[in-house]
Length: 126
Image 1: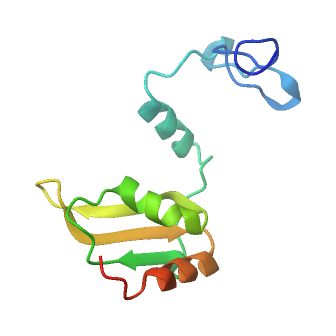
Image 2: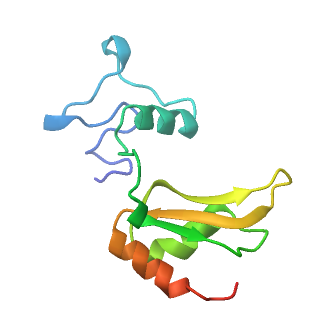
């Protein structure tokens, strides 16, 4: 068996805790599926499990002259190959009409990666 329906990891009944036991939800019952991924992500972030806090300035990249159709996902696709990006570490600034203002930010976890990514695109016309 394997993790996709065979014997082994529990499916839908909770997460594996330390020592192999299933973690329980409030009241000791097995945790059910969250109402949405948004709620699940929010709860995990609120618990501090994703790290967070302020990203050091040397890990931040400021990008300008982006096309009007640029999104957060586009910035992630463009910069992720350089190295690990911090949680919520990409942001394309968006106008009220939904188009990009031409400015974006990428927060890397490693300052050397940020420098390399910034250097790779410096002076590149977009």
